[in-house]
Image (cartoon, rainbow over all chains, first blue to last red):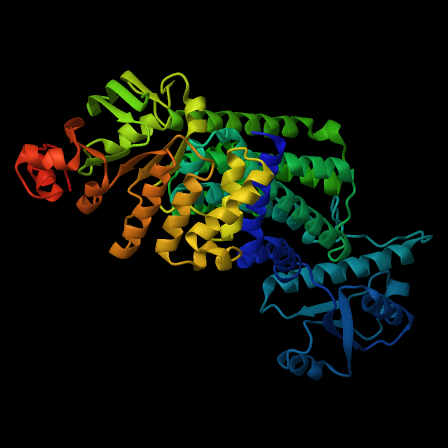
Length: 370
Length: 246
């Protein structure tokens, strides 16, 4: 088969994809939706939360602390309360999520006793949000204290120490972006490749092609090419969204990140091939892709639950989940900003898996023909 | 005259099960050869071996003069195939389907363009050329599938139950296409469940339990078995079968 025949094959695959508008919409929209869901809706990060301040001291110290809280991107002071009696109603109306209470003489205590108190009252009906809000507020107050402390002979004792590596603001999106990338690529490449090949078996068109002079391998490669391109579009859209919408920076090398993503795409494609050669119906292919590939990707890659905390058998199993290695690579390159030297082992594992899967599926394809 | 298909003791076993048991027959060039048998009698396995989809366990067979064990690539270039499942893409147009399948066989663009219009005219599908195949009635799809199977002008075309689920009128029209193809010198190897279709064949073989139970012209078979229709011939033979399910 010549080059033009191969191209006509790819053209045909594009017709299939482009004419199935609903599926195409899902394929291209899915990463966007997932990034939005994980980045905004499911995040434990809090932005511009409405808070109120009850300032019973009204001095320089409370004024500047209030100003700093308001200036932080996490809070927005929507009310200034006049008495403790207003705290309850403010919460009940659902207007505010946290109230900062400065007791009388706050600034005085700070200057003369080296010890002042501030009360943070949070709406704990959503404990996670309450926790996060008080942590953020604490951080703002600590920052202020540190600045006031400078040049003082008798500094305040700081009881809590915050140390967040790579994600000092505990940004949720940092861990979601690599996870969503692994999920989307796995879903599109594995499931769609498996389904599209099995579909031809169901239709009987595969048999017609196998009776023709076309080499079976070329049929399969032609099927994989459009999904590889589609995945590149998805990689691009996920990265653009994370950089420009979620403010997650790409600290490492972009070409390295893209190259690793393409490698993972190939792993997923070969998994799809293997599934397609082992199944005869689209439903089975979908079922295997979802339960056999997608769930482990979500559960065992470390993206939702830390692998280190799992029991030994699950930790062992997690090693054969390709997404786990890809997740480590993306996290390292994108967020820690390390180079290839730090991820070559994981890359090697992925490459090995890909080669292994490809070999088996090609072999299976041949057995089927004998 | 050279034979289009020859087999000698062609056998296929799966473990201890002998699906095709040493069948020997010849199909002449330009002949319409009916390949009958109950479900499970082994006709699909035999056909798959002839198409190069499956290797024989023992015995010999040639298709278009090529050995099925060693020259499958050459065989694939010389045959056309229409599977029992309807085998066109519903989400491609009539023209795109033709172009795609012709492309598989490496036909030139000029050949494809010229022949496409001829085929469309023959099927009276000129106005539907750019419509999706999914929108066509089943009978038209099947006629189109047959025309696509012989588009690259093969020496032999294999039809695996091509008229399943089609009404009698359309089946008649389908057979007219088969006659035209045979008239052009294409050998037609067809499996079917319909006994009226068996009557249209030049010669018919009936497989029973992996062996060829009978092989003759429909007229000859009826005389041999002393009955009036192919239906009765088939029933008489199938009654003796051990592993029939249909």
